[in-house]
Length: 303
Ligand code: CP
Ligand code: NVA
Image (cartoon, rainbow, N blue to C red; front, top):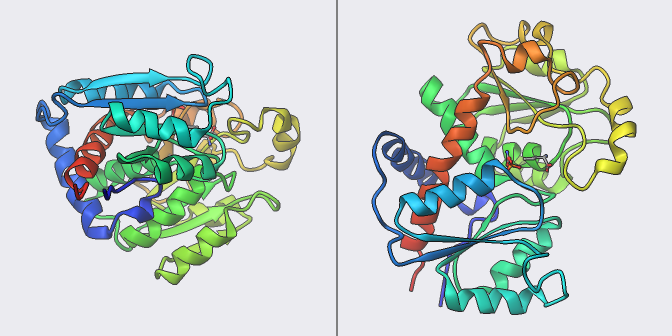
């Protein structure tokens, strides 16, 4: 039985992304249809989460479905039950699996063995749900992203990699400023460029934000990198998004952050809490976009 997964933004075409955005606008304005009535969705979290966990749980409930949150410690996963066994067991009970984990290979293994759609709720490599919702937020504000410039400042991490994927599908220019040694994934960048993506990697944050409509950053040490935090703080000196850096972007530029944020590290308090910050809107939009992703995958299951 065929099913479609959402492990990366590149699992969708540009047309499908626009279809998802149109539906998400309706979900934002109205009570969503009860398209998950009688259906259950397992939310498996192998890392901490506030936004993703709550937005998926609320989203499933808003569409009349039943969400089940599973953690390794609260299940047989921490006791060593193989993921491929868990995948087949969960497929017998639920209609969709949402998974947050460390290595991207784990979410791929889940998708390979599960018989229902699998959604990537963040891996070390990618965070597609967040960036799709972020592009929805930007498109709502600026009308279209085509030909616009977006800046990424800081770590070439899971968020940066997903922004690279998004740039190639939504035809915006992406300029990333990352310190040496913290570049985004080389293969993801090459693939995105091969798809026609206008992606540039520089070292100077001021160059990256010039003319950008959105300035993005993220924590300097992601989940799983806590022991490197001191080292990274040194390496990322000069990569903080300050008011002065924001002033170098386009006049109507917005500040974006997937959150949680470290005020005074990667972003100044005045920027995060300032008038150009759209971080709360970004977080809220996760709900609507993810509702539509679940709906979309279940409709396109090919059963
Ligand atoms: N932005 C994001 O994914 O937040 P959580 O880690 O709280 O889910
Ligand atoms: N890059 C961060 C994103 C958190 C939502 C992490 O992986 O921890």
